[in-house]
Length: 309
Image (cartoon, rainbow, N blue to C red):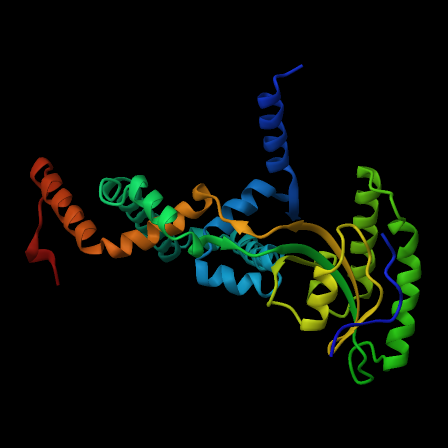
């Protein structure tokens, strides 16, 4: 069954290089969240996101994307802050674990970035990238928010189907003035985003309500089919009509779109290096063993077997 639209869509003096560099720095400094005064910037979030393993990242992309990752990270930081507040990091065994994790990370990064560099070269990575462009296809994506009202008389908000529809109609009317046709100034964009997020936070029956209804960047095939058909058909900055899916009634707002294409080499390079490292595992291990042997010969190392129990 195709998505059924119940209400109509509401239509629709520095050098230049230095200026762009400043813009990028400023964009990286923008906050995405604050946690008891601790500011998480765009740059910090991007750094954390880049470290997420590919398989885990794929799961996130199918369930809210970077916004969902941020939500989980906020929970993690709250627990870390609580641990620090109680001095848990001062416990000897915890300090030992922290030092072991630090040592392991330093070892792994040095092997990857220094020891393996002559084995897994950028030239080989580039050759792999150029020879298999199908591995780096990026599907069309949209950055989307929604408000959903669930028809469930026994649920937390106890709405019948008729009540859910009536409530969504009122929300649509409330949002209408902020989505006027042709009003695409930066001020208007910021206002409509803020208003949509406010209403989603107070009204939506979905876990994304905490993030203002933000589902992050999503690809085709990761959403409910009826929702997806409506969302991918929307122009940027336009509010949908009320869309019915098996989950309830939705209002959908597409913030941005990214057309299908090929992932840039620089973005793909970390994953390519990980793949090639696995292919050259025996050579990398041999290089590590050779280096450690050389270092032992150059260093003063003493072992006391009588003290090993």
